[in-house]
Length: 264
Figure 1 (cartoon, helix red, strand yellow):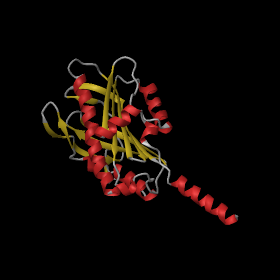
Figure 2 (tube, one colour):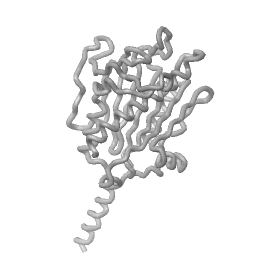
Figure 3 (cartoon, one colour):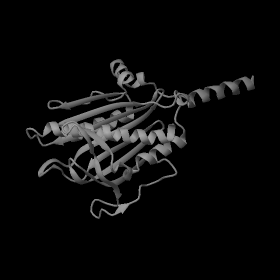
Figure 4 (cartoon, rainbow, N blue to C red):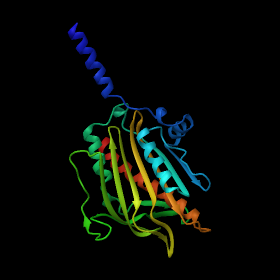
C-alpha cells in the first residue's frame, strides 16, 4: 500500500513538473489561429481610449501592463505577438532551469544588438537598426561595461544601456528584468528625450517597450508591446508607429538567434 501511494505521489509530481500552459489558455481562438498560420500578429492603436488588444491571459504580465497604461496614459500602443517553435522533442515540456538561465543571460547581452537590421518600408531595403548598443554604469557617466552574466536566476534585475539607432539617435535606456518559473520579461524605458532629427518626440520616461517570453506547450510565446506618449506632429506619427513596429520585428529576429542557441 505504501509503495502504491509513493508511486502515485511520484507520478503526480512528474506530471506537475512537466506541466506547461497551452497557447489556447493565453490568447483568443482567433489570435491562436492567426499565430498557427503566420507565427505572428501585429496590432497598432492610436488616439481615443488606449488599451491593449493582444495581451495574453497571464496574470503577472497583465498587472504590469495595466500599471503602465494607467501611469503613462500612452497615445500610441504597438503590439506584436509571436510564437517561437521549439524542436519536436521539447514540445509540451517545461524549459529546464539551465535553459531558462541561459536564455536570461542571452537576452541581457545588450552589445549583441549592435548591427541588427530591419526592413525599411519607406526605403524598401534592409537598414541598420542599432549602430551601437552597450551596457553602461549610469546615465550620467555612461562608462561602458561588459554584458552581465549571472549563475543564479534573479527575480529582478536592472541595467542601463546606451543605444544609437538611425531613427531616434544616441540615447540612454533603463532595462528592468523580471522572472517567474515559466516566464522572462523586460521593460525598456527611455532615460533621455527621443528626437526625430531636431524635433523632440518622446520625453524622458514616456516610452516603455515591454517584452515577455512565456514557456508554453507549443514553444515560446513572445508578447511585445510599446507604449509611447508622443508629440502629435502631422506626418511624423506614422513614422513613429512604423519605427516601433520595425524595432520589435528586428528584436524578435535577434531573440530567435538567441533561442536557437539554447533549444536547437
